[in-house]
Image (spheres, rainbow, N blue to C red):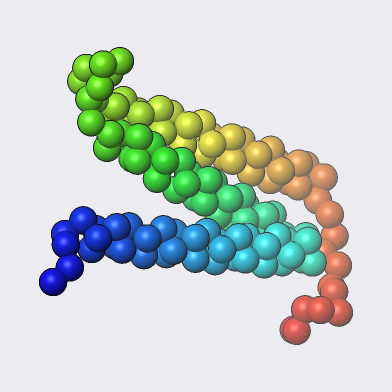
Length: 125
């Protein structure tokens, strides 16, 4: 019979493996969206890629913050480390705001000075 501690450790390693796979899938997705934005010149693809970057970075920050917040109280933190979650929320909000500003800025520039759409040979239709 396995001890509870080793089973918990194996579960943790499995979660870490899934986290790395998730990050790898997100990076590939971001790359494909950036390529699509580059090929088509679409602000829509660009904004979708930026949103994916924000999602990836905020997910990593949230995992780190939750790991820190789960630590028990110690001599320096009498009430625990739960405030790390608030820091994570602040960083996530700032990143979302930055992405929104970039999307609005780029869209505004396209509205004021439109670029003609160029049909690329790599687009199928």
